[in-house]
Length: 534
Ligand code: NA7
Image (tube, rainbow, N blue to C red):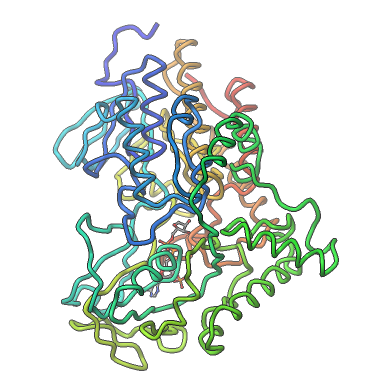
C-alpha cells in the first residue's frame, strides 16, 4: 500500500541495548526493513559498558528478562537472584544470536545527526563513519544511563596514574592489588564496586559528597526448585508484573506505615529488609508520599546502618540526611556498609573537606593531600536526556531537540515529541521506565510503536506526530504526579540535579507502570488521540 519505497529502510533503530534489540526483532516480525546503529563493538548497551567490579542489576534476574518469547524464557536459566553484569550481557548475546539480531546493526558506528525531511516525510541519519542513511521511522533506543558524567573538577585530567569511569569500564582486567585506589561517588556504581575493590586494594579511599541509602541485596544462588516454580508460572508472573507499579510482581504491604502500630511496622520493615534491595522504598505504599511515613522507614534503616558500622563517627557520615529515603533510587548492595569496618578503607566526607583539585599524584581536598595509584570516577550519567542531546536531532523546520527541550524534556507518553514526526523514544523522559522494570518497559514501548506503525500502514498514512496540546497535558500530568510525592525534594538524577545547568524537572512518569501502559493502550484505541496522522 505504500507504493515504491523511497527510503533506504523502513525503520532506523539507534542502540543495541535491551530496547533496541527487541525493537529490531519485533519490527522485523512486522515485515519491516529495520537497520540499526550501535557505537559499541557488540550488543548489550548499559550492560556492555558498565563492567565495573560488582556491577549487578537491582531488579531480580527472573523479572529483568524478556517476556516476548515463551521458549526463550523457558530455555534461559539465571544462576543468581540478582544477576551480575556478565550474566546479563551473556543473556543479551544469547538473545542476539537466537533471533539473528546482530545482522541488523552497524557496530562501532556512532550516530552523530538525525534530520527530518518534511517534504519527503523521512529521517536522514548520519554517522561518524561517514555514512548517511534514510528511513521512514526513527527509533531512539539510546538508553537512559548512557552518557557518562565526568565532573569538571580542577585538574581532572592531570592525574598520571590509572583512571577509569565505572560507566566506561575497560575490557581488560583491572588489578587493584598493592594499589592505593580512590573512588569518587557513592551512587549505585560506587556502592556496588567499593566492597569488591576493598578486598584486593592495598588501600581504598572513598570520596563521598552525598551519602546514599543502600539495602543489602540478600542475593543468593537460585535453586533448581525456585527456577522450576518460576518457569511453571511465568505467564502469571508476567501478567502481575505488567499490571504493577514497578514492572515486577512485588506489591507493597496492604496498609500504610502510619496505619499500623509500631510492632507491625517493625515486623514489615524487618521482612522487607530481609527481602533486600531497593524495594524497601515501597514496603508501605505511603512511604514516598508522606514525610511522616517516610521518617519511620528512614529511622529503621538508620538504626540498621548503625548496627553494621562499628565507628559511630563513620556511621554519621554514611547516613543520609539530605533526602527522604527512596527519593533517590535506593542502592541494592552486597556488603557496602561493612566495608567501612576494614582497616584498609578510608571515608572522606567531601561535605566537610571538598575536593580542591586533582593532581598528578592524587586528590587534594581542603583538608589533606591524598596520594593515589588509581582514581575511579563513579560519578554517574547525564541521565535520560544525555544520550539524546549528544546527537544533533533536528525535526520540522530544522528545530533541534535540544531547543525544544531547553526547559526540560517535553514528550507525549514519553514516546513522541511535537515537531519530530515519525520519531519514537524508548524508555525515555515522560515514561515510567527508570522507575520500573526496564525490560518489560522496553517491550511495552516497542509493542506500542509497532502497533502505531501498522496503523499508519493500514490507513495508508505517512506520518504520526504528537500534538503540542497533548505534549503540554502530558508534561503537566507528569509534574502533577511527581508533585504528589516526595521525589522532587531530592537532588537526584531523576530531577536532572546531578548535572550543572540542567533544568530541574522530574523526568520520569511516576504514576505506575501498569497505569501508564493502560493510558498508552487507550490512546491507541481512541485512534491515536493526541497524535496528528497524515
Ligand atoms: P549516580 O547515582 O548519579 O551517583 C553518582 C555519584 O557521584 C554520587 O554519589 C554523586 O554525588 C557523585 N558525584 C558526582 N559528581 C561529583 C563531584 N563533582 N564530586 C564528588 N562526587 C560527585 O550514578 P551511578 O552510576 O552510581 O548510578 C546511576 C544509576 O544506575 C542508579 O541510580 C541505578 O538506577 C543504576 P552527589 O549525589 O551528586 O552529591
